[in-house]
Image 1: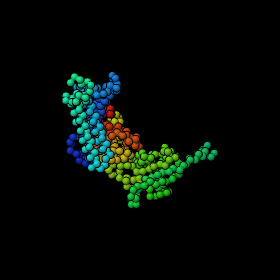
Image 2: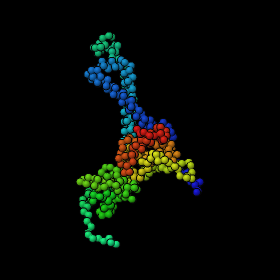
Image 3: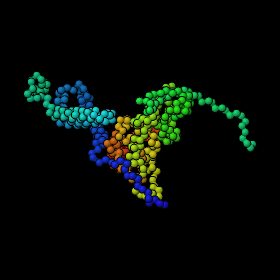
Image 4: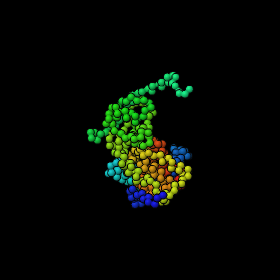
Length: 150
Length: 258
């Protein structure tokens, strides 16, 4: 029995890279976690808007104004906006990574996805938190009927 | 009665009917062709024949320049993986009677690897990827006696020991087609074979290698690999188990798969 002289195999074929934040992994985890949240957020959103109460006929300017008067729906829609938009953008990113070969075209697409996502997130959030159905100095004829109190 | 004698003529087995199979093969000769092209061959075959037999018949009787790899011809060596009617199969395990003979059979080289000639591709990138996951036992103890393992522990990675490295899975993966840097299903399957082996101590090394930008996270679970595997390995499940092990940080705790 001569087992003392077994040489250790080469430890690494290619040196492992420096460990930084692994975006590919966190992107993958984000898709699963946000997917779970979105199931609840989207179906509750659809139920409240389309099925409960008077159903889809209830949706008008006043209905939306009523929702954005309550902090609950402001937070709900903010979560929905951020989770869904980033989920979708991350999906677009993986599709571009998988199917766009040319480096310049890929960079362009990724930049376009990032830019549109950021713009939509900022605009959407801005609308949710600054929405005022009855602006103070608007012309009288342009205000909805429920603004008579002003 | 000492010697058995033949008293009556044995029943002549009914002749197995033959039919003409049309194979359309994607030919490419780098010395002559600028682009690959399709070429038709008609061969007289039996239903019990395989696609490999048809290729042999073409090479031996019609066109000796047809090039393809095959070694054992019995589904063990993994040399003759090719794309048959759009699906990655071993030519030696695909019976003609299982294909639609009324239509031509399309045969081409596996995709995603550099085409060298006819049905032969350059397998080097495939084996580079395989090598990089360190496909050998990593153990600190000296093997003075056998390393014991229970039946349950052996069962844990049994499925992935079946791999014959034919590249049918890796070359069916749409991510591998567009991203040559991706490890590919076969390398992950062979990493799985050691990661979940109770005798192996290199699990963390392999998990770190696969926790790369081009590692397991590029898998989109399209199940092409599971469909392509001639050994019936549940490739996508194995990849999911490796993902699970990376997230939990240890392979032992994996029991349920997402």
